[in-house]
Length: 309
Image (cartoon, rainbow, N blue to C red; front, side):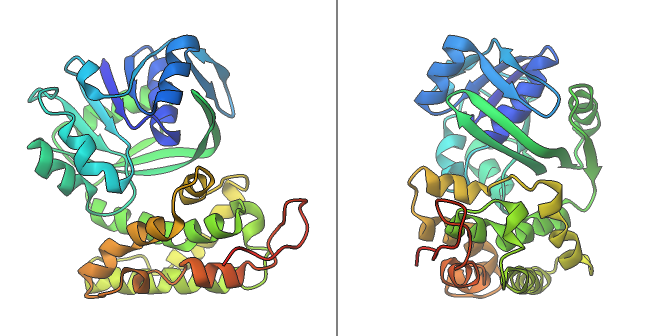
């Protein structure tokens, strides 16, 4: 199968790498530093069960693509329209496009700029780009995909590559549940520079997480989404499952992106849908509150430190 990964970051390289290892022809579209490394040495897939370089093709823009059978669309939400427009002319009617993105409205936004059907996907993986062309897996890896005519065949293909995949008829609920998880952990991890495992050991963080979840659930329900009653309990179990994972927002901040913009991008859409005029009001785990709750998080030497304001 011809596979195109749009957004060769931690998510795209992990799932693209598994498909590559399973024998599929995968092309990665991403930043120059990763493209150069992949073309020179192959993708370094570093999982809990496998570590090795896999020969692969990579480019910085989608004009290099032949028409793929499958697109894994993995860019950040703010880049959805621009990256979607780059696919113009690359998609055949039978091409399957999967949106492996956080947030609840990216599939619709991508569909609007491509004119192509898009299948929403919820991602449950802990991974990072540990270096140029090097993806490191910390835990998880399951996908939940929306119901569509091609979903059954796609699920079989993903499963055959070692990717646990289920099909959800209620994908909207699953998307909102994942977004709620992001609101719970992403800003805390980013502001404190702390991984999920030790995060909940810091005094006050459990209360911040619970508050973030409760408010996000309130917003979801205001938008007509049915949410699980035990979501707080489910989310508080996540750090134990992937203790070394840093949130994607934390990884972005480490690369120099503005955290205020990232927090608003993460939480703004659902707030606006529920009638909030200030996007940050729909995400109580924003920078100020996260910083206060994690002010005794680890410092450079692993001791006590004051988080940045």
